[in-house]
Image (cartoon, rainbow, N blue to C red; front, top):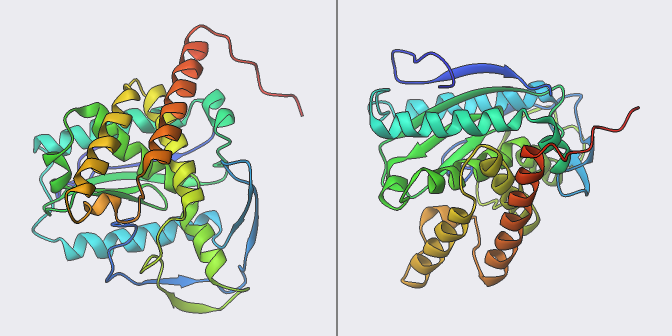
Length: 282
């Protein structure tokens, strides 16, 4: 498990990493003190592309904390208790994924830049029919109960959680804010995610990172293909499930996922057999 269970059912652990309700729910606004920050040179992101970031590591953590507090307040009375099986499953799967995040060769493989960032991993399950989950900056996670009506096993649950965790690890929220604002704006209300979908580039990154994370966490990445194909099929039958509202799924994406799975399985086998090159000396 990730940490000790609080009385209200939350589950938290402070993890200094070494080694979006549809991203936010549409009513949510967050106060972000951006004075003196401006766009940060994020360097090369997980997709081996230049990445501009708006938030410092501390600001990113504070944004996640505040947003999560507001969401839990909104769902007061509908946060499942720790003993609920869906909560136990979500926390167990998350704990395994978080452990995989700390694998240094994996960090190099997917080019994660998390040195200096702090993730306070916390998982809650919210009573809501949405087929969805999200991970906010800083590692704040929520799973909606509607998701359990479609995931067939923990491998598919890991598919969703690792994908959402990937967005946080790749600092996609900070990048989106950087693209939305020119220079420091002072203290202001930032509508972080209203009507702002992840673009296809970020989605492709989260797909790849997520597949590698779940594979190194010991889950079967082939179930990721099964899950997204099922979601695509559900989309053809009418309105898309919430999880697809900002996660476009099409034939090209499924094919890319199959390639990610092949690479992740090969990487995990090489890791298990000790065929991983050591980090380059600086």
